[in-house]
Image: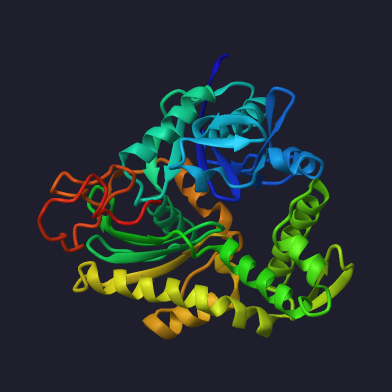
Length: 396
């Protein structure tokens, strides 16, 4: 394969993966998958191969037991059971990245000169190693790794012209499908540095979806207890198919309510359309969003608070909810900045040439499990010394 002078930035996400091409003349454009800039990160096993994206979603309607919707959430598991087969997590991620490479090469006529792969700033060396192994299996060689908040901050400044003087801070509020991360990034003379990053494994758009599904279960359990039990705890292929359809409709309804006042969710098995309004959605989402806002305030106040704050940037599809910007502004006194497509921000930033970057320091005691970067501000556990990973931040 010939070398083509372009740079490829990839943001492997929990629900969707985004890839952006940066050409030699400075132009950037997203890689399109079936006409869309978002490639669903899901994988489905089929006759000795792994299907990816919308093809995997389609196959999962028939064989849901062979489907893994969120490989990124399984980063610590080693292997994942798809039907009777154990598949390495690196293999699942590699399947997604292989699709990215294939579509990019088809578009550009050859492999990129440079590949950049982003990762959560809190990920430790073991998780980054899984990502690199997947990239190698996908034929991407050894890509440059860039922390997600660094790529996001760089793109926001380039796209909006925001004034971020050297020595000032920005907050990157990354509210994705599976996880939430709040990072404080400072601008240095040589680039960007992550000075603090904390996250929540159970505060993403999927957790908002869970709250909606639980609400529907409460509403319909009295009149249709058997059907709702089948939806919540599916046992048969038909039940699992209905469960998948319900979750997909819930996600679609949530996205519609970011721009509309009301919509409906079709509830399979009982065959009813349940109304859902924006105010109702905000009540259901409020506990999850409140936790993300509280963590953002904690990180902001603990990370070199004497430095001036130059911006609060919203990243990730779940940050589209109007409730997010409202609560953040109320809590921090800073009006958040959000772009039209927050899902593309990290990939857009990684595709552009970045100055030298740094990540937050790891544990100095040497007891970190390596799955994520430990916060140097966390107090040590008392003696005796814990087993490996015992006092690290919770796995991500």
